[in-house]
Image 1 (cartoon, protein in one colour):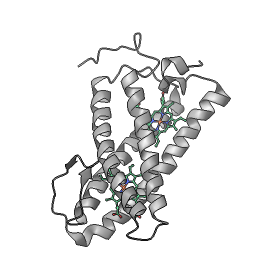
Image 2 (tube, protein in one colour; image 1 turned 60 degrees about the vertical axis):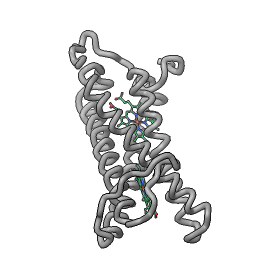
Image 3 (tube, rainbow, N blue to C red; image 1 turned 45 degrees about the vertical axis):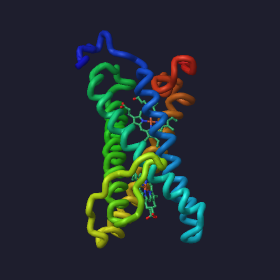
Image 4 (cartoon, protein in one colour; image 1 turned 180 degrees about the vertical axis):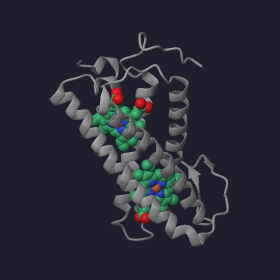
Amino acid sequence: MSNQGSRATARHYYDRISIAFHWLTAIIVVTLFAFAQTWGFLAKGTPLRSALQSLHISLGILLAAIIIGRIVWRIMHRGQMAPASTGLQEIAAKAVHMLLYLLLCTQVTLGFLFRWSQGTEPFRFFGLFSIPHVAVDPAWRSTIGGLHNNVAWAIILLAGLHAFAALAHHFVLKDRVLSRMLPAKNRGV
Ligand code: HEM
Ligand code: HEM
């Protein structure tokens, strides 16, 4: 597809679709994490705990679709973005972004495997439809659950570092790194 964007015509700001994908991903990931931490404090079987768990699963399915869409969109438009910085800083930023994509894909896969390992537990998308069951040996359940928990913390820590770097660019270095990911009307730089 459109991969002709040479450095001369490269964009300095993300397009609207990429910006929407980015902030939707960020909001959903933080919500999924917050829900899991909250239900950890609630007694098993309480209605709120069950509601948070089924919302976690529905939002998890939505996140899977968003990540697939985001990656397809990115591949279709690769080469169009001008780098935000140069040298080591550019390499570090790219490495963090790639690691975030890798961790998100791993986490979504683990989430699906986790649900399937829970046997007959419902796997529904906001009550609209069910994800077909795939047989995953319940003996793997606690291993998959442990990995899902560890990857969740890795994503939150790395995304926190990434957000901190973006804010430092904006408020300390005063460059346009953060503005690149903001809608046109919110760009200060
Ligand atoms: C970045 C995205 C995600 C984050 C940060 C996240 C985080 C978590 C955390 C921290 C737990 C608690 C784990 C434990 O206590 O051992 C959990 C549980 C769970 N997650 Fe996720 N998760 C994500 C995506 C998904 C996805 C995509 C699915 C599947 C659609 C999913 C399905 C589950 C299930 C089935 C549980 C166990 C619920 C139960 O105890 O019945 N998660 N998640
Ligand atoms: C869970 C939360 C987050 C995740 C998973 C995440 C993930 C990502 C990923 C994968 C990219 C690379 C985009 C691409 O080139 O395809 C990116 C870019 C970016 N993110 Fe985040 N992000 C999160 C939160 C945040 C927050 C809170 C901020 C701001 C405070 C932020 C600011 C940015 C900026 C400015 C870029 C563009 C950097 C550049 O131009 O090189 N992100 N993010």
